[in-house]
Image 1: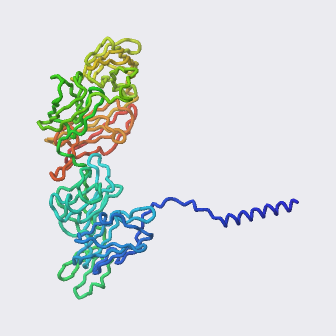
Image 2: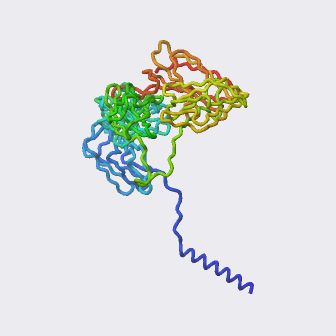
Image 3: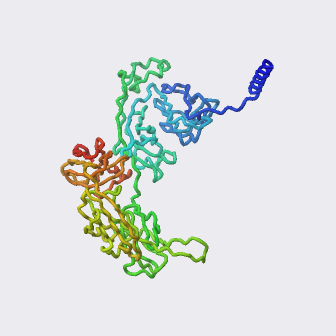
Amino acid sequence: MNERFWKYIIGLIVALTAWSCANPVAPTGGPKDVQPPEVVITTPANGSVWFEGTKLAITFNEFVQIKDLNNQMIISPPLREIPDVLLRGKTLHLTFKEALRPHSTYNIFFGKGIVDLTEGNALKDYTFSFSTGAVLDSLAIEGKVLDAFNLAPVKDTYVMLYDSVYDSVPYLSRPYYLARTGEDGSFRLHNLKQGNYLLFALGDKNNNYLFDLPTEPIAFIDSLIQPRFKATRSIIISDTIHHDTISHQDTLDHMLADSLEFKYATDSEPAFINYTLYQFLEADSIQRLLKPSLLRQNVVNFAFRYPVKELSFKPLNTGFLAQWNLMGYNSIGDTVTLWIPEPGADTLSVEITDNNTILDTVQIALKPATRGRPGRQTETVVVPKLSFKNSLSSLKIKPERPLILTFNDPVSLLDTSKLILLRDSLVVVPEIRFTDSLHRRLAISHPWNENHKYRLTALDSAFIDIFGHGNDSTALAFTTYKESETGLIQLKIKLPPDSNISYIIQLLGPKQVLVEQRTIHSDTTLTYNYLVPKIYGFKVIYDRNRNGRWDSGNYLRKIQPEKVAFFPKEFELRANWTMEEEWNLEEETP
C-alpha cells in the first residue's frame, strides 16, 4: 500500500506539471523601457562630404515614431521648404524639396522629434551633418549656461547662433545653429562655418525656438562672436583628383575654393572658444498692480511688480475720512498693506497712483465673506485678538541683540505695567521702545547674561491695536546663547578702488538660505558672532544701481543681470570656534 501511495503522488505531480505547461499564464513583464532609440546606420554616413543626392536614411535599433517634427527639426543653413519625412519600418527617410547650396555644411537638428514606439522615449539632440563640398565646416565653440542669481548650472536650455544679426532676431527668426545644455549646463556647437554670430540662450517654453514668452529665461553675449578653426587631419589634393576618391572620414580643415587645395593641419583636439552665459528672466519694465487681497477685516494687501516710488491711494466711494488709513511697506517695498480703522463702508473703491502714474482702479470688500445659509444667525461671536511673533531662535537670544516682538496690526496702546520680565525669579526692568512709525515692531533690550534664565509675560490686553483688539496673556521663556556653544566669523573684504557701486554681502546657511545681509561701500571687516554651528558661505551682489537688491537684465537694452559671486569655500563652523577669512573683490570685475 505504501508503494501504491507513492505511485499515486508521483502521477499527480506529473499531471499537474503537464497541465501548467498546457495553460501558460501572461508574463508579469519586466522593468519599464527608459532607453531612447539608437542610430544603427545612416545613408550617407553622418559627416559625409560631396553629398549630391536629395535623400537621407537613418535606421534605428527599434521602431520609432515622429513627434512634432516640423517644430522640433532645425536645418542650417535654413531651407525654404520643409523636407518630406517618411517612416518605413525602423528607418526614417528624409527627402529635400529644393537644391542645396554648393560647398556648404548642413546640420539637421532633430530636437525631441524622434521617440520610440512603445514608451515615447526621445532621442534627444541628435544631429546629422554633411557637406555638399569637399570640406565639412570645422569651427566650434563650447561653454556653460549658469543661473545669473545663484550660478547653478542650467540644464536643457537651448544655445543658439544667429548669422543674421539684428536686435530683434531672437524674437522673429529661428537660429542658424542650435545645441542644448547638459546636466552640468555645458554645451558644444560644432561644424560651424566662419563668420560673425549672435550667441543667445533660451529656456524655450513652447518649443518654437523663438523668444516670444515673458516667462522664458534668456542669456546673451554682448558682442558678436567668431568661432575658431578646429585642428584636424587634412590632406593636399589638386583639382585633377575626382571628388569621389575622398573619404568622408578625412575631415579637411580649410579649402581654397578656386583651386581645391587644402592646407595641412595637425592631429589634435580642437581648441574651442569657451563662453559662459548667465541666464535670467527679464523683468517687465512697466510698474503694475499684481494683486489686491483682503488679509482680514479692514486690512488690505497690494502687491506690485516693482518697489513703489511715490504711492498714493484715492478712495472713490464716500464715507472715508481724510486720514482714513495707515500704510506699511514690506522690506523690499513692492508690497503695501493698508489698515483702515474706521472705513465707513463695507467696500473700498480706490484709485492707485505711483510716481504720478495711475496704475489701476480696484474695488475690494473690507469684510471676509460669511459662510453658512443666508439669513442664518451666528450663535457665537468670536472677538479677534491681537497676535505677535518673536525673534527668538530655538528659544534663545544673542547677548547683544534685543528681543523683537512683531505685531500683525499697529499698536495704539501699550501698558508697560503688564509687561513683566523675570531673570531667574527676580523682576528686572528692560528698555522698551517701538522701532517703527506704525508701532508694529517692539524692541525689548536688556544685558542678557548666559548664566540666567529669562521669562517675559505679557498680561491680557498689555497691547491694544488700532481696531481696539487686545492680546491674550502670553508667557515666553528663553535663555541666552553661550559663547562655548556658538562660533564667530570675521570676514575682511577688500573692494576695488574708486568703486561707485554698492556691494551686498550675504551670509548664507545650508542650501543658500539667507542668514544675514549687509551693504558695504568701502574696505570692511564684518563680524558675525554667536552663530549656531553649521555650514556657512558668503555671496556678494554687485549692486550697480545701488538700490539694495539684485536686478535682472534686459536683452534689447543690452543690460546684463547684476553680477554675483560666491566666496571660494564654505565654512564648517563648530562650537567655540573663531574663523578669520579675507575676500579680495578687487580682482573681480562687476
